[in-house]
Image (tube, rainbow, N blue to C red):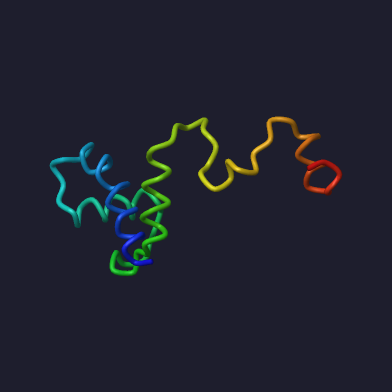
Length: 88
């Protein structure tokens, strides 16, 4: 399980770091912390925050948030009917 998380972070970190080549790893983590509005010390920055922020950096402003995309419906009426179990 830990290997999967490390691989995911490294895969997501590469394009982010290439955009900020002049920064060190610690500076990159501080930037991720700042962008995610994380106010605690950087030593308490969790893997989940890093992964989520790196994923959010790769999507456009008008794109659907990762994790919500699978439940996304263009039509509010269909979404409501699916939520109530009327439609599948």
